[in-house]
Length: 255
Image 1: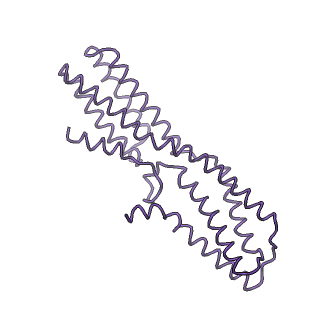
Image 2: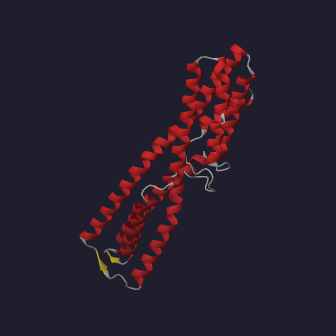
Image 3: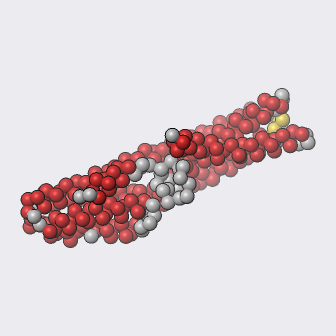
């Protein structure tokens, strides 16, 4: 229960110290009468423009995030299909090649889990997937062509998914957009500190609320831009679940 709450509120806990600092600086600026800016409609327009920009960035990274959620389960399905094909051939032909295929699939699943945590390199994972080719070649005399075609199709799916995950993991979505969003949010928070708003207690609420929303949204973009950051020390990042692969690993351990 605590873990779920921590994952849900960890961004809030990260934002609160920034907001507290901004409020303290606002208090000091007000106390020494350094508020030289007046509240104008332009301030509201700038805030709206920044929120629109951040919303555009969030919609982009959410598209990748939703796609990423299904990739581990698709990998697990492809591996399980290959294991099923190996079991069918083994049951029918009693061939050691089928046993070799099953062993390789089990080893490949563990290798993929290590790769998600960056314990293995992407190039090595591709080599591991390519190592299925000699096994498929040895299986050709033992089974029908459509069985081999099915195995090759699942191998192709694995390559496609690994390539997509590697791209999502190693690249940022629109870094120039991130930069301008961070700059605008910083300038707006700074501007609100030096803006005179009466009465003072309303200005504190306004500054704290707007700062919280802007900082939270910027951090949220960074949080979900890489949904495969299992290798990072922060245990509370919103990574996609590896449960399908982990459950498959548990099922095959005893086989």
